[in-house]
Image 1 (cartoon, rainbow, N blue to C red):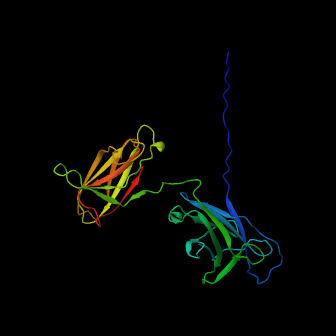
Image 2: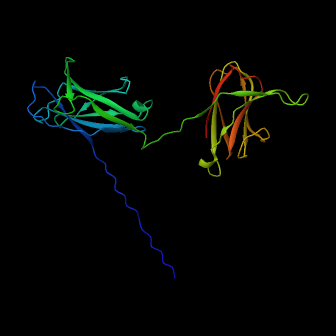
Length: 267
């Protein structure tokens, strides 16, 4: 007799405020010399990130942010500014402000380490720098990560076409693109593939061709799964096709040189 035991996995997750303390030298002198914080900030692409900053003086007492605005700027390794955010001051907690690094802010920011600084502006736009510790270091480190939400994969780009003259008297010349993997390993019994054709002054047909062969050579059989007719299109033309294939390529009925700039494919 075989007995089975069933168990449930319980994994705790923590929902906490992402809060960092910084020092503002609003009295003109420092009364203590010890680090205030040393941890890096981590922000995630694909979601809004709420970051709390507690602004304190050298005595570790929160300062009033009435009529003041806290601003954050972040730079990449080339010292190019990639973020500029304004904080929202807490209505009841003295010295506390929240800065939102939104999903849209990070759309074009790759995974990397940024350096950031925080300053306080008064009603007259006079700026006071804040420090990451009481040694007057004013730069913090912010890590941009896609670990939580990796997002869509980059599209594959097809740009090269080669003329196939065919057989004299039987068929006309056509132009075939290089073949790319249709990534059968990531698909189940069904898969939707999307391609976008970028053209200018091209007139003719573009066929989507696929094969189940494991390798590509001159004798590889190709099957047509979709055809797109173009007539001087100047905006990308999409085409979808369904199936689990090993490779995909494109066939142009007329010379695509300087007329089809690229075809982007996402499997």
